[in-house]
Image (cartoon, rainbow, N blue to C red):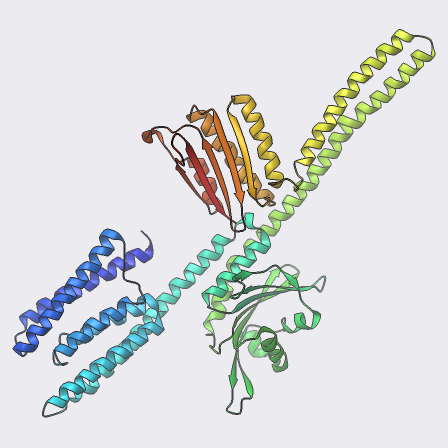
Length: 550
């Protein structure tokens, strides 16, 4: 059960308790006019039935009234109760608090305040209507109660909005940490983190601007609402790069317009550095024009030992950011930047490993190829000497041994070529294709199980991801050999833009009682953010499906 499911079930239970207790309390109150009393009891009974249905759907079916609609429906029920009682019953006035609480803690400050204002307005309208029918106007009903309701609703909306905002911030921190997976690489991790930050603020764009202090290179990566994500890093022109990296701290800017139409920038310092050295207004004008901003927030950080960076969150609407967002964005950066450093270290280690592999190949070529050819040269010299001296039989015998030696070395060279070609990307699946086909061929020879390999989509270029998928293929085939008597298996790998799908199908369908989910495959897939499931695509077959988001 998710946290949202738990909250919705709690709200449906509270609604049921409110409806039931209101009906019992109202039924015990005999002070109301009999006609109004009967009508109000009928509406309360209908409200109770509605609450029971919603509670049953939540508990038994896991279905809920959409959170954006539910508080307004509850407000409608309370307004109807106030209407049929003509605003005279003290019991129905507190019921307005339930939709206000629901909206505030479920949807946030704006929705909570909207429901509070609608509640106060509706109660005031029916209070005026009831007062107009009486001899005197009851100021307590017409003015005081709606005012209390509005003030209490505002405080509740502030409180609920703070809670909703805190939950959303924690969720974003969790998401950017989960996105920081080593298999994505540095650029992909930056792109996904920028898009998560942009979506959190409902902004138009989110910019990462970096200035390398050693090379003086300035580049940016941008997540855009229109593009639906973040693009690749691009180099910035010197003037724009200089403008986007002002030598000051964090600051917030929103664009305001006078009656004359003249633009005015409202600048707020986000930290002590910006207070002591405020940004230049001409530079801010340039930034506003380049980013097409109505409001933006800019936060500096250290990207790594020799580079400085800045985050820009940009809205095209003049909706100012709160100063507290500076601290939160810094918290996000505190989560992401260390992981980027780790990814950079992993990439460096991978590059070092590749260099070491090339050195190993060079040593192998020297020991396994060059040395035998030196022996071949010496053998040829000995054969030449024997033939020149008239020892034909000895010369022929030496030449025959040299031919055998040459055949062996040619086969060794072909083996090296096969290993090197396995790393070429011209094959449909790239290095992974060659490795999987080679493994499946050896698996078939050793076990007698025929394995068909099918690659679709794009080549898998990420070495770390390819290594993980290769291990999954090996484990899946090992499970087929250990747990089934299948004689034929198909390995299908389909790599698209957003996911990689691995399917291993064999020609045996075991009884349902013997089915199991391979734990090792599940753990590997979960570590990559993917899923594993087992099923029967056709009668008499069993398949393992692995899906990994890219």
